[in-house]
Image (tube, rainbow, N blue to C red; front, side):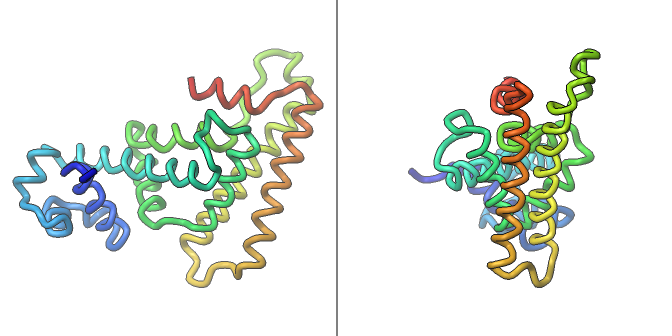
Length: 208
């Protein structure tokens, strides 16, 4: 099936950001990349703000499709461990456009929502404060939540390092780091299971 004009425009905009950065995203630069007129872009995206917002959603959706391909299924078909394994392993192949758009979205709650929705389905969320004294006294559950989130921060850190480093890690060292991050998350999952906390159920609740 031939991609729609909107899809072609968004793919062209992604290439502009990948190559030259978000600040270079203009009607003129995207039109030249897409082989279209500026009027053609205006028909589909009446403002740069709308184009940029749709670009966030477009690239975030591409990121999720990459996660699904890595994991072999959609988030609701996989266990928490399978989802996080895919999340960590995909950090070995950082995409510059994703990095730049994520950073740009940090100042825009609407754009940031597109990325947060993917994170909520595939990665541990920040530990929530206890709702009761009983929860506050449950050291095992709290420790598991913190350890799980540290694993997510480590995966994010690996992704940022690989995206920004001029050399990157060699293949063997990258694999060892990846396995250590996954092992940290698995220890957290085992600790959570011993405390009666179910990360998979909690993750599913957060996406409803």
